[in-house]
Image 1: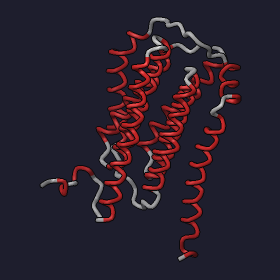
Image 2 (image 1 turned 90 degrees about the horizontal axis):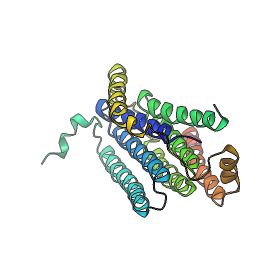
Image 3 (image 1 turned 90 degrees about the vertical axis):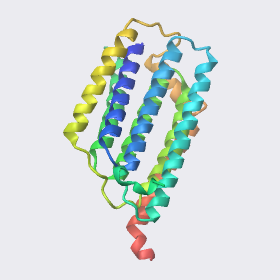
Length: 102
Length: 161
């Protein structure tokens, strides 16, 4: 039997890696991958708590489905933006995205 | 240490290691392959928890959808990613992990009782005999087809043009 503690440990480490990657990287796609990592870490911890505490609770299932939708929509939006900006030869260092200003 | 814990440790090392390598590698396409490995590790963890439906959803949405889309988007990217300062990155990982470990982990350290299975035989039978096996294989086949197609196209693009 695998204790819940192990799953939460993996989730915490993945969350920390994702946060550190977002904080220290400057490429748009890598930042999106960091956000995806954070979402997967939250899914692991949510499924862990849901399985060990209240398997009959349907609120957790709804929250998980919402997380899946958020992850998919976020990637589609950002990649579309990326492909569009790439066609305009824009540098993807996010500190230089001055074209987003009015 | 029982066999299931050893296998879990292997999956955890795969997941966390590929998450770390995501930010260490220089090419974007390698980073996308790394995050795909992290998704596969997370799906295997769902199987350990006995939630095969969520494992299937993770495979379908994250690997079949998101990873494939990311591979297609960055496959033509020739430039290397803007590299981070690796010492800064490792330091940030350490600080974030320690902070969250101190604040979160003591609250879940108490022994919990798992209502369902998690012996290795149950896991294997769930994976092999489950009704989702064909879908798992389809997702992996789709992903490997996309990567293989891109590799072939990159190799023979000059000949075709």
